[in-house]
Length: 231
Image (cartoon, rainbow, N blue to C red; front, side, top):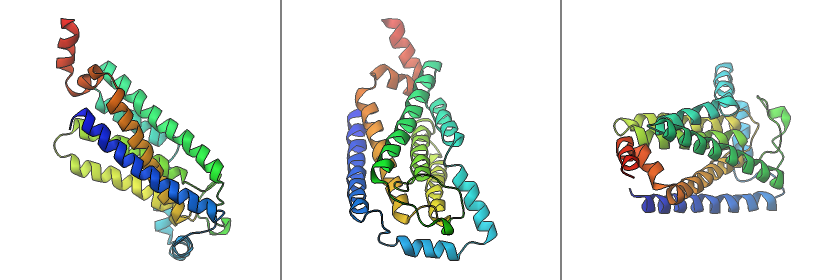
């Protein structure tokens, strides 16, 4: 896939996700943060099905969706993407910037929507701040997307199982937020849509505006070195 096609695909996916996120946000705001659709049913089921082992697993998984773990993973993704010191540094910078700026934008949306969380009596984990969109969900999904992109660049063979495993992790972190009762179902859906939308924007921008030499270095460092030498 050439750069123009990649930019068009990423832009289309991002636009679609942003449109769906915008509609969901307007519905949440229009209902003044009240539970929507199956929010209460999902919460009721979660509260009624919490054996100790499942809670321990959920708490362990949900802890990986925030703090140092996502940043460690995107740094690793950047290191995997680059094939030279320059390429690795550039890729790490882009990946961490995408994640950090996405988190910052998400904080702004949370403050703007100001949706209350479910009642604390139903919580089985720690939470703070507003509910929509889910922060852990957004962060894990963005991280998973960046790692999957790195895998696709550097692992032309056998990448399917790796991508599936990373995607499952990103999805499960969001599901734990519902299971632990600290988010509504639509908070988690909003987090997924937000992450896909922001990742689409970042990939589209990178495909359109990154210098050709940088992309060539990631794909073929020997060719890039020859081009620099011949100048």
